Structure formats: C-alpha cells, structure tokens
Length: 301
Image (cartoon, rainbow, N blue to C red; front, side):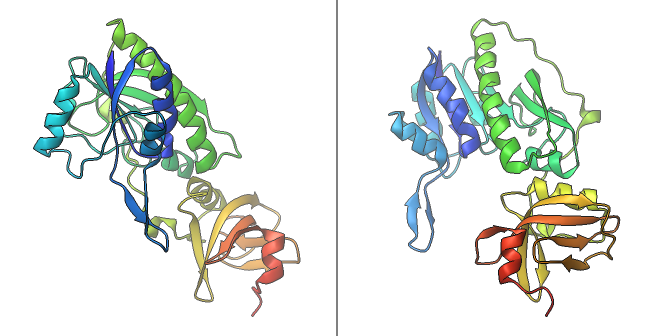
C-alpha cells in the first residue's frame, strides 16, 4: 500500500520507522514548518522531518492544512491511506482523500483522555494503567471508531518522559498491526462510548505552578506528569524553582509550603503529608539532585 505519514514530535518517530521498514511504500511525510530556535535563531526541523530526510522521504510542510495547493499535492500521491501520529487536527477535506481512510494513533485508552495531553493527564490523575489506541479519523477530535488498543501498566517510577517513550514504542507496534488489518480488509471498528470520555486538555503554565495546599499524593502526581517537560514549579524569594522528582513522606509533618532541610535532604509540606524533593532546578541553572542543590542555595534567608 502507498502511505502518507503525518506527525511532528519524537513520539511519532518510532511509528514512521516501523512503516519505513515494512513492505509498504511511504510516499511522503507531512509535518510542521521549520522553526527558529535558540539564541542564534537557528532554523530547526521537526523530529519527524529530520528522520524523513535521513531516509530520503519527500516532506510536505503546510502552514495551512486547508490550503488548496497542499491538498492538490496530497492528491498527486494517490495514497491508499494516511497514518497520523501526534499531528494537528486534520480538516475533512484532507482525511477523506485516501481510498482506505485515515487512521490515528492516540496515547490513551480512548475514550479516556481525549485531547492534546493524554500521557500527562493519566499521570497527573494518578492512573495505574493507560495505553494506546488506533482509530479511524472523524471530524470531532479523538472520537473515531476504534481499531486496536493495547494497555500499559503505569509504574510508580514513571514520569512523563519515561511513559512517553514506552507508549511511543508500543504505539509503533500497534500501528504495524493496524496496517496489517487494513491491508487484509479485516478491521472491526468499535464505537467509542462517549459517556466514558474524559478530557486531556493542553498543558498551561498556570497548571504547572504547584499549590502546596493539596495532598502530597496529588502534588507528587502533578510533578511526575510534567517531568521532564515543561516542569512543575514553585516560587521562592521571587525565583522559579522547578521540581522533577519527589517521594511522599509521612514522617515529616509540615504546614503546606513549609520547607525543612538538612545538608542532604529537602522536604516541603502539603495539605496532607509532605514531599521529599529529590531533583530540582533553579531558573537559569542545571537540574540537580537535592543534596547538590542545597550546597548552592539557601532556603533559610
């Protein structure tokens, strides 16, 4: 089959890799525009474009997905299907083009966590399992009929970075299985139960600021759901401090926001219990273990 792949971030790269290693023909890749980054405003590619270029796959980078020139170019490839992994919301004019349809990989067990940040919200909400889903695209975001799902246990040590990488690799395998079913015309579509749906909206800066007037478990889950990026933070002496790794402590009873430390260990009080802070970062500085951080920062002034 002739396939057009659409995706942008690192999460999508293993799925593209699986397709390129299959017997199918990836005729083009669609990804986001190049962006200027860093102090020197150097033009950088998306991770998907970088991988596609290395593998000599034609790349399309539309600013507008409804642009007639872009749609006309897509039609020229005459692809059998589109595979979408972590890309923008496709307009109907685009996703109806391939004869066998357009299919998306989502980082949750739909209908749970529909939206832009399913991995983060599963962690923030303290879920014990999540997974990936492939589904056929429909106009309303993340509502299409399901083809395959695979469950994944969330381990206590998982943060966003760890779980993201797990789901990225598992998702690539589910994409491979999904394409095999499509090729054989052997897909059985399962309708989503909208009554079981839950949202996974985009992560905002406001969400990232820690409130110590919440139970330690909830703050711990927020921190792991936002680690390593964008990072949960609190303000101390007008400085922003990001926290990346914590452990709930029932032995250090402190008031919400109260800080206790010695030369090696750092604790901050929550509504119930406290958090032992294991890894953190002062704005403009490196991420450090608590002991190393305490050697260079004074919480007692």
